[in-house]
Image 1 (tube, rainbow, N blue to C red):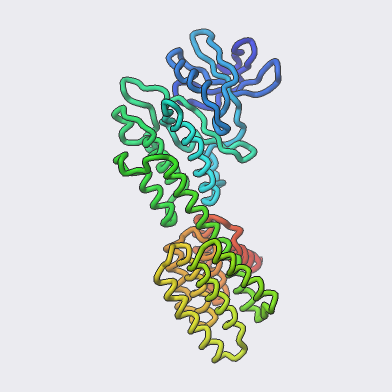
Image 2 (tube, rainbow, N blue to C red):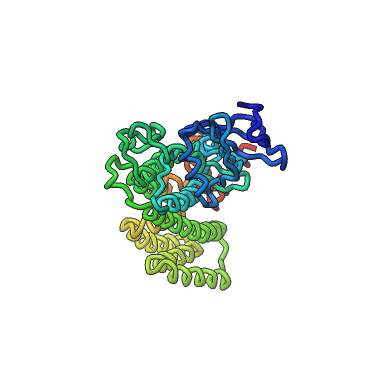
Length: 406
């Protein structure tokens, strides 16, 4: 087909995909000079064309022309210049933080499809059918599977399609299953407890055990995002507090005012647990600034006892992580490196994608003169798992490693 001109207007330049019931080509509009995606369908694909023409969503490529020529149907659609999630995954260009944002975006377009009358089931969700444009916007492409049924069996891709699709049963719950399988593949192993709980529910073999509506899944993802954003706010505080204490500087009245402002914002936004932990963090910082060693150790120990109670109770997973980081730092200040290391290892098992855990533990190992293999193993694990490599302590640790190698 390459080189063919369709409708005396669209010159097919190259084949860029094969999906649903036809092939997709990049084409040049000979009159306007623009590029389009042109899909060639067999005559049996007329239903797909009719449905695609009726869809109107910013994350679905528009159908701008529809032709019948030489026994085929030709759909002319927006050409999305970019890469699909399979390509980005293979190149290592996807971060876990970015995948959370993309998952929430995908829920919005699936909500649109599932709430049409009648509902539209996409039917073939997988990394290849999710494209990121050069502007960073997510698009859902290739609508061949959801509109067609052959001999009672709805199309889908093995490994992603829901089990019931193999016997010709398809519903909106099938898309939720495929969502879970897609994101399990993209995230890889070692996901945190929040991701694991969400994806395991999506991927239940029984449709009745999955999320029953896409908006339920979307709410859980947004809740996880709010929780992680709350952690990052705290990390900025605890990292700055640690640097001040280790350097031996007093924050002074200005620093105390900042801590009080932060404490008030935590009380307002996150309630009682945040207020308690904020006070303990401030007390820990004050203890670390005491000059006399015996008095400093005594005060640090008293605050650490309260922090450990908070940590062991696990009052919400995000609060447990924050308390654990402060506990480990307190043990470092008391020169109990063994106990600090045990806390960091426990935190990494609970929160394997936390840059603050990797960064704080790595900085301690550097200070202790750990061997090269230990440092390299931790660094490689962090590069694979950490969601946000711009987190404060992670950047400090990586910078120190680089300077050490130089």
